[in-house]
Length: 197
Image (tube, rainbow, N blue to C red; front, top):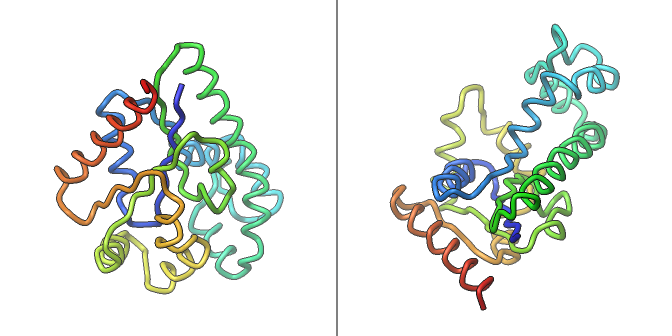
């Protein structure tokens, strides 16, 4: 089984590209979706214990947690210490299930793949990128997003140029969706041909 890691900075189109891989029948393990589920269950009590007032009715209040993290950036490490091991457990279950099914190719969608040392857990890395002006335009359209919030997020992410330098494959989403789809299909073809060789 080949394990591809998918990553890219905020606003690059990573979720859209992950959906395109899924359209080709590639099973996708979405780290953000796992975190969303954990915030509604397993992780909520642990997060509340370290960040009092960050949950409501047993569910993490993302706004309250974001406010705390903005005020205390060093607390990111504490949060990551709670969440990352739980995400890894879910990822391991996903991989074990697909190995048992003899799935030829799976995709791990990991936003901070390089930053969290995830490159050693995959066979190849796909980096999603786009023009910086397009990235900024996309992100600032999100509800509640500000230039300050974007700057904070980007300060925690490896620069796009560094990610591209470390990538095995690059998908540029600056163009239209059809262009992105063609690039996804090309990556799948290349991975399949390398496996066959």
